[in-house]
Image (tube, rainbow, N blue to C red):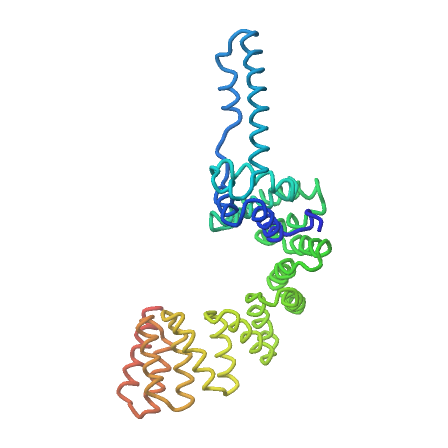
Length: 360
C-alpha cells in the first residue's frame, strides 16, 4: 500500500507491527511511551558548540576526534540494531528509541514516520494534536495542511485535517471538497464519509448526509455515532422504523448510549409501545440520573397507562432537579386532577403562576 494514501490509524498499526517484530511487543510499548514533543533548541545548542573555541589546530584535532567517535558510535548502533530481542530488552530507553526510529523510517519513510509520531503523541496526551479551539487555530491548520497538499497532493490525511479546520470556521463547501478529495484518493475511508456527512447535516442537506453515513456504516459497521446520527436524520424525515433500527444498533454496540436510549424510547411512546418506552427512559435515567426532562418523559408515559402514582413520583423528581420546571408542575397538576386530588393540583397551578410572575 502507498504510504501517502494511508490513514494515520493505518500508519500507526503498521508501525506498531514493525516495532513489535523488531523489538518485541513489550519493548515496542517502551518506544511509544517516549514519543513526546522535543524540547531542544538547535540555535542555543549551536552557540554553545561554537563558544570559546581554540585555535585552528585545536579545532581540527577536535573534529578528527569526533569523527572517530562518530564512527565508533555508528558501529555500536549497528550492533545494537542487529541484536536479538533478548538483548534489546536489556537496553536503555534511549537505545530502544534509537532502534525504533530506524525501524519506522525504514518501514514508513519520513512522511509516514511523522504520521506515526503524531498518533503516538495523541495517545500519550489523551487528545488530538490538531485540537482546534478557536478560529486562529483553524486558520493555522488550514495553512499547514495546504502547504502539505501543495508538496504532495496525494497525502490523504492532509485533506481530512484541512477539511476539519474548514468545517470549524463554517466554510462548509471547502470542507466537503476536501473530504471528497480524500474519498477520491481512498474510496474505502469510512472516516472521510462520516466527516462529510456531518458537514451535510450542518448545511441541512439530510439526504446526502444519510447517503454518506450509510456508506460509512458499510465500511465500518462498528461506527456507533454513524448509526445514532443517521437515526436522528431518519426522525427528521418521519422514517421512524428506520430510526428505531439505527438507535437499536447504536445501543447494541454501546449499551450505555443514553441519547440513543432516550430517542428510541420517545419513538416507542409515540407509537404506543409504552412498555418499551418506559424501559428506554428507565435506562436513560440509570445512565443520567440528573436529567429532569427524562423523568418528565417517563412520567407522561405512566399517565398514558394509568399508573398515576409512578407518574407523580417522576414529575416530583423532575421538580427536585429543576425547581422552576413549569412543565413538570403542569403535568403533575393534571395528573392530580385525574386522581381527583384537587387541592394538590391547585397548589401546583398556583406555583406555576408564581413562577411565571417571577419570569416577567
